[in-house]
Image (cartoon, rainbow, N blue to C red; front, top):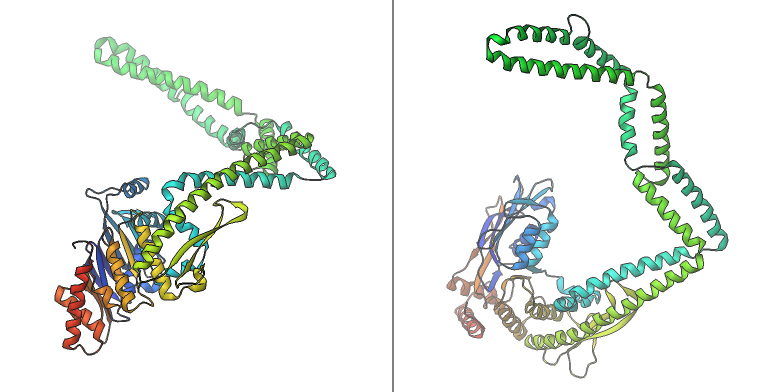
Length: 563
């Protein structure tokens, strides 16, 4: 669940902090008070879009912090997947800092994270239903996704298998499309590829030799400087009566004469003898190195020519020797296919046939599961819609088959509804009004909530186009969902506000210089007064207050749980 929200310098919010409760949290306030800004701040913290004007005027930054409480296995696994600390007790702190230039910094449990990580974690913790989300029901492409979500436990692996099969099938079909060529073109391609194969083969490229040649080239191209430097070093250490080797040799002889007088000198003599030996080895190696590098012009020319040839091959066939050799291998395979063209086409068509048969079988399995789960879903939807004051409703899903396979199977499906007796079933886009769509979406959320492990649901004005008895039904449905989920709901309707387990009012305040939004939790008596404001408008009479109290009492009697 969402435990708390802290917002600072966000839009017209100076600084607010609110502690949310279990079950149904209701947020009310005058139009324009900033209710949607509160929900918007949550959305931003969880990876939503950010604009520069979100930072309050004159502030250095805006900050939104959310604290969740969750010990769900999938949430913990997702935190571990991103190598994020898992706090004892399941506390999860998500924050987002927004700079005036639009740059943001997101953190989870104190660790910096990318936006994608926040979004993935958020989808497991919270579901936000915005003011216009119910419009998505008008697009039938969304309908099948809802069924799949409802059936996710049964079709997850099957959909993954179909997706992999479809990719294989698509690749084979594309290969066949490119493979069908006329005789003249095929012979030209064979001739050209054989030329390329011969050129690559003749080069006898060895993986890693380009790097080795580059190293040799660096050495050989600076041979003069190297020989000059090595010769100077050799002169200081090996030649002449003042060389290091001669001096150390003399020192060894002197210490040998006196070593018998003091056993401690033996250790020093041993060290000096080792230095003499090492210096001898160095001088011998330096002399050989100078001799080997002395005449390197021919070797440098050979290295340059080999590098030029390799770079030329890279410009034609690949950026590395491995890519060049792989290209050659593919050409050899294609030449072999073209030389036995009829057999190649026959084998390719057979692969497509086998793959298509497998796709047909797996898509059929998926379609059968979808139809079974769609029947279960629509039956639950009818019950939920009746609860939401659709008195005589029919709700079904009709299936059709696409003319082609897709990565999502071959089903083409959409929900259809009839809201009045005697009316035929029609697509949602043909019959549903705005208020009906919002109730249908609420029904869908309530049905899905039975399956979802998501702890928190947010409804931003789910009551659009709803009034009277229907509003009471919506409030009761929210209460049912709140039995097993934490709900945050922005509303303008007293029937819904009365059902609150925790009631918050959002207010806009001004000192004629600045304007800011504030939020506070209401006591029982303050909640009744807020209901009266919603009911009565500008003038709150004694009768309005009585109605507000009665509405609160009635709401308590209809709850399915103890808050």
